[in-house]
Length: 339
Image (cartoon, rainbow, N blue to C red):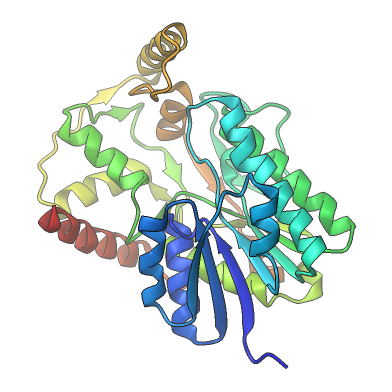
């Protein structure tokens, strides 16, 4: 009889996946197979106890079948997360890969699948505020191909639950902390390029999720009781924050002076529209400096209810915004010193 659960963590070379592998290893309760495409990023994960890295392409069904052999629980966090790109790329990374995962789970006798989705499925209109959104709110349209294909992947997971696989879907919102190469780095890139301006009135409230809170939610999902299965859960810190106040705070703690200037949402939306139009006309694969979806998200409120996660997963976020910003700032300064 095995004493430790065998966990397959996809997307292990990414921000959330890497932190998950680290935490699972430190607990000493798991044998972990970490997977991603990038061997250069993946091999260092083997410094952690009970971790083996296996490079794989999740759009290759044969690769996925091999990964899932002798696995108890799959945590599937791999995805193409972007607001720009080709539909086929999003489909392959988000829908096809998830289908391959669920097929392999069933074929290889995996007991449970924890699928990482996104609240990016919720907005159905550009320029839309969303408040205290519950998991049952599913729009008729999506503002990005990313959101659309992530919801399609959720439907794949929901279908396999009805066929007998234990599943849980998590929708973490705006993950931040040590290892974040997406949210805060985008802000800093815009700052250093002289392009960082407040879009709208700067009062928009947003939920965020400390990466360790998300990891805690995943671990709770790995061990959740039957009543929690087959459900989707919003995951946040449970404390909405004024987004631009957070941005100003990070800049201050990094010693970067910023005279915040405000630009009307309608103006920036038109600029983003023009940039998208040009990118399409020139058939550029490169994401425009601004997209209409990113402008909308940065200037409008999005808050989520986590009552369902509290009730069924016993999820109670322990890590605060202060914790996450401090660890990000410390880590970022270390990265700059090594460059």
